[in-house]
Amino acid sequence: MFLRHFGALLQKKHHVFKTFSAHFQRFLAAGFSNRYSLRVTTLLPLVILRSVECRQNDGQEVKRPGRKRTMSKVKYETCLEGRAQLYLNAMKVRWEQLHKVPGLFSYQLQKSPQSRKIPGYWGFYTELNAERSLKRRRPQTIENLNPTFKPLMFNFNKVDAREVIMTIDDAYGSPEVQMIINKSPITKYHTLICPEVKKNHVQRITREALEFCITFMRSIDDKDMRMGYNSPGALASVNHLHVHLLQMPQDLYIDQAPLDELAGGYVYRLSRRAPTEGICIVFKDNDNDEQVAEKVDQLYKLAMWMCQNNMPHNLFITQDRRPGQSGNVQVFVFARSEYCVNKDLADFNVGFCELAGYIPLPDPEKMQNLTELQVLFRIRTVTGDAPKALYEEITHIVEGREQSLWDQPLTI
Image 1: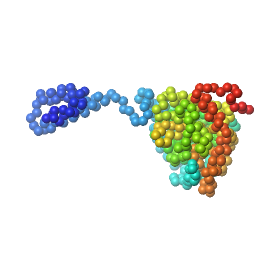
Image 2: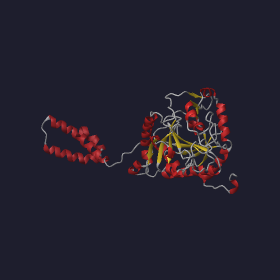
Image 3: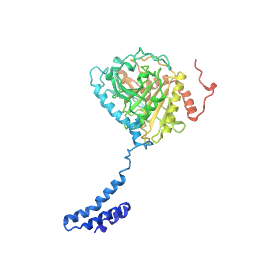
C-alpha cells in the first residue's frame, strides 16, 4: 500500500528516503492493530517528508524579493538599504499627524486641489496652491554658488522641535539626517532631508548627501515619492543644505521623456525634442556597490564643476517609470545660464518641480490660461545654452578624460 501511494514521491525525494525508512521500520516494530493506527500510518510519510524539508531549509536565509544583496543579512538590516522603507513609512505617519496640529504648518493642503493638464504634446501638470505664495517664509538671497553660512539668518537649527519628523542616526555607513516638515508644502508628505544639520553645510550638495538620497530612492517601494534639489541661483530658498522629498503620483513628462545616450551606457541627455536640456544618470537595479559609488562620484564631480563655473543647477531624482525599467533610479541634472537671485512669489518660477513637468501656481486664472508654449519659452529662457558645456563635462568625467586649460570655460 505504501509503495503504491508514496513510491513515486520517495523516488523524487532521495534525500529523505533513508529517514523515512528508519522511522517507518520503528513504527512497524511497535505494531498496530486498529483503524486509528492505520490512519496514523497512512499520514506518517507526509509528516516525515514535511519535517525533513523544514530541517533542510532551517539554516537557509530568508531572501526578500527584488535586488540581489551583496552584504550579510545583519549588515543589510542595519544600513540604509534595509531601513529606508521603515523610515519612509514612519515619516508618512508622523507627517499626517503633524499636518493636523494647529499652527504648525503655514497652511493646510487641500485633499483634492484644483489641477489641470495643459493641452499640448508634453502634458505639463499644473496644480493650484494659492496659500504657498502668500504664507511661505520669504526666500533668502544667496549671493553665489559658493556661499558662506550665516548663522543669524534662518537655518534649520532654528526650527521648532515639533517640525523635526525624525532623526536618522542609526543607519550604518550613512550620515546623520534630520527629516523636517516643509512648513509651506507643495504636495502631501513634503519633507526636507537635512544632512548633518549642526555642521552648518551651505546649500551646496555634498557627496554624502547624494549617496544618501540615491540609496534611499533605490531602497524604497514607492514610485510616487520623488526628490529634488535647487542650488543657489536655481530657486534655493534657504542657505542650509537640504533636499526635498515629496509625493508626486502624477505621470509627468519627464517620466517618459526620450533620452539619447551620451557616455558609459548609463549617462543620457534629454532628446533635442524634449522641453528642456538636461542629462540623466541611470542607477540600474542590478548595479553593485562599486558601480553605485562610481556613479555617485561622477555626479558629485559634475556638481562641483557647475559650482566652480557659477552654473546654477537643479536635480530631480525619481524611480524609473519607463516600461521594463522597474527598479532603476534616474537622476536628472538641469543646468541654467540665468542666475535667479530671488523668487517672485506671484510669478511662474522654474525650479526642479517645473523642470520635471509639475507646476504649482498661485492663481486659478493663470492656471486655466497657461499654455504649453509659454511654459516651454520660460523654461528654455532660464536654461539658455549652459547644458552644452554640461554634456561635454560629464562625458569627460565618465570617460576619464580631463579638460585642458584651454577647453575650460572662462569665468571672471
